[in-house]
Amino acid sequence: MPKIMAALMLAFCGSVFLSTSTYSAGPVAMLSGTGYVSNKDWWKLSAIIGVIFNVIWLGGGLLWTKCIGYW
Image (cartoon, rainbow, N blue to C red):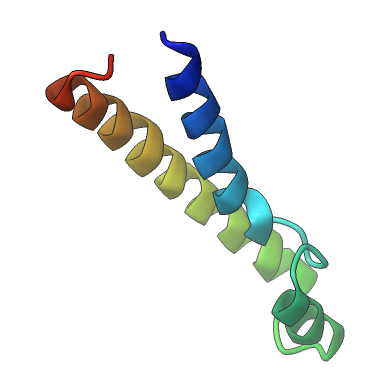
């Protein structure tokens, strides 16, 4: 795999994982701190969304880069 492709995949996946922690971004602290979303529900939804995003980014992204000739 080309180095640029690996770097791009890591960058895209890093932006997806911003939502996994209850204090990873500004609005998340307000949602978790006020009790609007419980920690248990937050972590459960983060795991589900993380799996979905990984399938989309890695599965679809690898197929797309293969189609356009990057890989």
